[in-house]
Length: 95
Image (cartoon, rainbow, N blue to C red; front, top):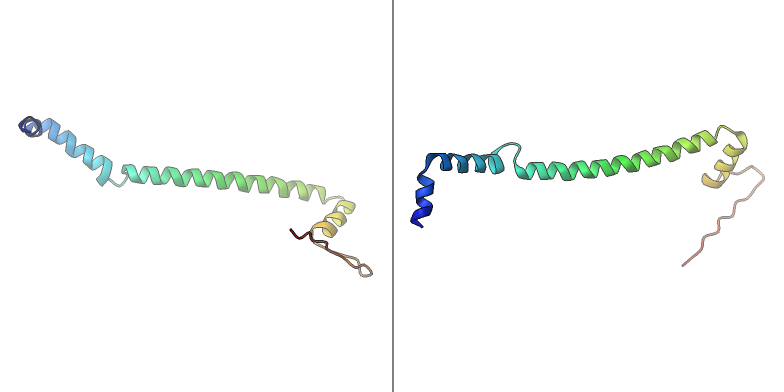
């Protein structure tokens, strides 16, 4: 125990310990903040990938809708549009 106190009396070691405590725990950019920011960054990158895939899918759909036949097919299948003299029946499978 006395050996440990002897090391703490050394001003360089004491300064190093105080500096390490300040940098790791008390500073604005401490270890916990860095870890929290890394987790947030990873979540945002995953969301970015999801948005990019949805964007590509939407873009390809819009490119296909330039053709009138494709537009009518999309409206009928996806948006349930119909002509005035038609009836639409939706079949749902129950599990």
